[in-house]
Image 1: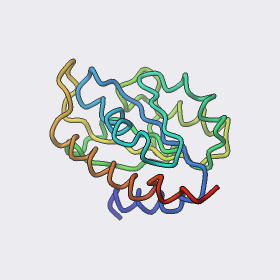
Image 2: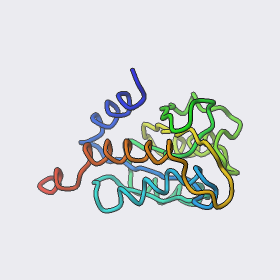
Image 3: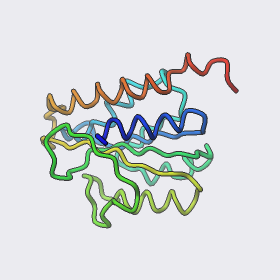
Image 4: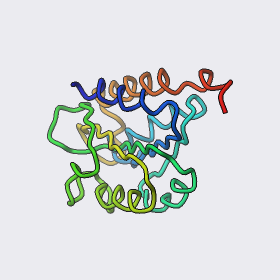
Length: 166
């Protein structure tokens, strides 16, 4: 199953649950800003709790837990050796213990902390960066990945679809 199909399947199962989407990244470091760009495209357009955790996701653990999510989707630039812009889904146990993202706190440690403090299903959506240079902006393959992800999240969680629900 391709990663976008797998993510579509995961999200489709989450439409009737409390979901938190946590975007991690640094817009000053090229493709590391991918999740923050996605956050900006999704803000106000989808039902789930949407969190811009920037470069310090650990500062948002209590806020995430307070929303009592059943599903947590973490989005970040992750160097997993794929072609630039490739999207890959990881379960917490698949995230290496060493930092695979560009941030100080490893994504494994962050997801483990969330798991200990909640009973949530947790997934990491990793986007392969092309370049991480200071002030270089997003590369074309990563911009295309943001567009595909934004379309998928909006199609799944568009606020208009849920306006009559409680």
